[in-house]
Length: 257
Ligand code: PGA
View 1 (cartoon, helix red, strand yellow):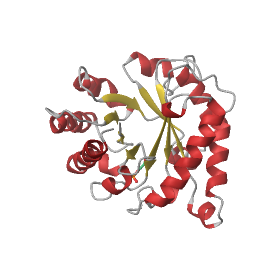
View 2: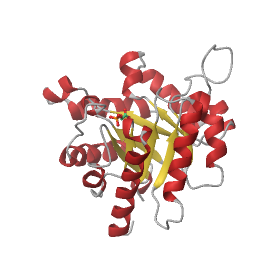
View 3: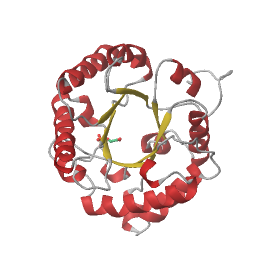
View 4: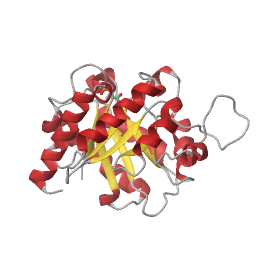
């Protein structure tokens, strides 16, 4: 199974998010082989998008979650509240939040803990920046992010662990990492996550994110250790999003996965 996570970021209003989600459903209608698709709109659109997705194969995710349990914390949204409105996934530790909102590894760890206390599955984002890659430190950085995020968590049985490898230099740049770079880093991520969580290897899903679009998706998705992709910009354009879904379907049909 290949996975496609659509991260609308702070780009779309409620009506646009609903229209896009409807377009995705129309695009996959009547097809037998469909990848696992998660749509992550902004908070204000979650409830309306959920109505569109009910009784479909497509699932709902949030883009962020509070690091604390429900309580007096103005402006934050707790994991329990997200689960309550029907979210099944939540993106944790996106590089935009780490870099621009000073989200630390400690906060990322707390957000994972909060998420795991609900029925939701976290999608942990990790990835090095350009200077770290140039210095040959990409693997060290990702290993450290994984360790600080996962160490000490009691991972619920049967809950999958989803990690998105998102090199900062590839996000929004128009140039994705090469399949070879992804393969090497995904191997490290799977190994480290397995060691830290004890989750069976088949329950660890490793995605790639950063400038994936309809043109390059197939070459990434055909690699067996790239379990799927996390889309930013491409997910907000229906034709691009459907082209990526088609690429995933073609790979799944060819590989019978
Ligand atoms: P992009 O964003 O696809 O627009 O590069 C990916 C991401 O930030 O998750």
